[in-house]
Amino acid sequence: MQKPYCRIILSLSAICSLSYSVSAQDAAVRKPGDNSGKNEGAFHYSIQKKLSSTHGAVVSAHPLASKAGVAILRQGGNAIDAAIATQLALAVVYPGAGNIGGGGFMVAHLAGGKNITLDFREKAPAKATRDMYLDANGNPLPTLSQNGHLASGVPGTIAGIFAELKYARLPFAKLIAPAIALAEKGFVITKSEAWNLNNTQGAFKKYNTVPPVFVRERSWQAGDTLVQKDLAATLRRIRDKGAKEFYEGQTARLIVEEMKRGNGIITLDDLRQYTAKERQPAVFGYKNYTIVTMPLPGSGGVVLQQMMKMAETQPLKEYGFQSVKTVHLMTEIERLAYADRAKYLGDRDHYSVPVKTLTSKAYLQQRMALIPADRAGASKDIQAGMISPLSEETTHLDVYDQAGNAVSITTTLNGGYGSRVVVGGAGFFLNNEMDDFSIKPGTPNLYGAVGAEANAIAPGKRMLSSMSPTLVLDKGKVCLVVGTPGGTTITTSVFQTLINILEFNMSTDDAVNKPKFHHQWLPDEIAVEPDFPASVRAELQKMGYTIVPRSSIGRTEVIRVSGGRIEAVGDGRGDDSAEGY
Ligand code: DON
Image (cartoon, rainbow, N blue to C red):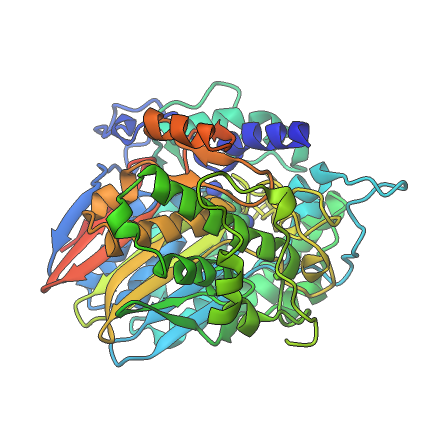
């Protein structure tokens, strides 16, 4: 049991698209001529971790993407316009996770009061089968679900962006213009991007049928310029011909040709049939607040809701931030919620999930009764709750505008650089989202999560996701916009960030940057960040907990709105940057 998870932990820091070994300050602000990529027209920038503004703000994983969003707000765009521009810019400047070859979720609140959730998660291709990642003896073959052409689900991002456009104000050509310019002229890469690109060279060479621009003999260095001509051409085609171009036109043909060269299974029909879906937002109360988050196939509506509702019954404020008692309780709450996730959660369009029961007060009370008072619980003793079946990589961005519109989008390729396959001639990475399905009951995925029938592979089905873009409303107005990447740690990071602010009255930057911890039922251990207090660790170990170090947990972005001020905070764990005006 231990061994496979070790592999997962090791691969996590490399895979999660985010090299955490590099501090944001390392991101070079270089003058033209100063970088070894030698491209005079390339875009430069500086990182801004926190800002306070009155008109609007954007926070995302990359300063150039946040800047693209704020430029759109300044031109009279609303939060949705800015989110689209940021998303597209991330597909260029943050190739490990920003994408047009992956998928994601949007949670938005319009100033008029409407909440919107949009599902543009990838789907299993029609030729996908339940056992496609098992060998003849039924043993799992996770390299196939994680790397190369067979790992990709049908991409949803472009369909998502065009579905978002319904709520936008400016012409699409304006929104995509910054991304085209960034791809065409190039931009100066940060130290962490260079580290990630260098670390993935072997996989780029192994899995690509046409060498992509990311492959290079000499090592990448901070300050080099990355120019992406094929991607610029793809974005221009999308600008001129719309979503149809991606799903039926030249880009679709390039994807299918790539699939044929690499023995993948995505067909033109799969692409043609892909649609993004507006879903009923998951809305629940926490004390006097209203939380709006993503329903299935996102985890917010069930896992986050369960955790928040269980936490609401406990005097956490009295116990204090990261006291032994608080960490014990929050860990046990996480364990209970993730045990249910493994058994019950999957795409509701394909599998009946008892969401009502799982989030009901009575059920959660029963679950809380399983928490031992003064010692660690044990995952072998905690199964998913008994419910009668009849009862029913990644990156995040936040935008807020002056009118009161708010957008929270998490989008992903799954692992860093997804399947590592760049569509030949089209210049973008395809996702490796198929690994988010349960490839065999009980077999852990890239993030150590196990699943069952609810999340088994089936044609056209969406794989379960931890992504939980979330909004908090106070008396009907948005007061917090929150979200993060981080695989299975996404839901616990959002949970802890909300509790930090709503219970412990923490400042926004402390809520984001203070060390986090994570328990996901299996493996039965608490992962903690390096600066998690040693004394609390020692006390928890005495109670019977297994503690494992984790280089970092999430890259949380938060916008907080209060008294006419808009405060945006980008996580210190990466190159994340806030912009506003
Ligand atoms: O949807 C999910 O749950 C995963 N594909 C998210 C992966 C992720 O957050 C990777 N980034 N660190």
